[in-house]
Amino acid sequence: QVQLVESGGGLVQPGGSLRLSCAASGFAFRTYAMSWYRQAPGKERELVAGVTNRDNTNYADTVKGRFTISRDNSKNTVYLQMNSLKPEDTAVYYCNARERKLNYWGQGTQVTVSS
Image (cartoon, rainbow, N blue to C red; front, side):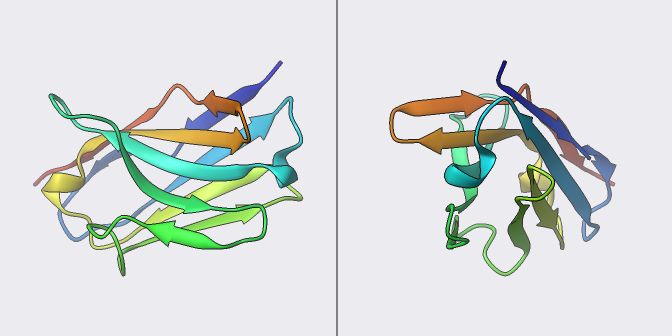
């Protein structure tokens, strides 16, 4: 059974940091591209960052220089280090695993940036 379990969300003040984790199971993690998406209230889900199975990364312009995505294939886990957080980063963050036509989602973790 495929599972993606996100953790690490919470409430943080502007300028603060959080590290999200996504623990994967039930599929060949190392062969999948992994991504983080987010969805704010009233907005569409958007790509935040992605890492391929060859460790190539890409980022949304809004988070470049502040967020870092990484993966640990030995732990079947992908991370999102978020620094210099802004109120507009507030959203539910979702982990995604994709390989060709296969596409899996986690349940999401809430990140709230507020003073």
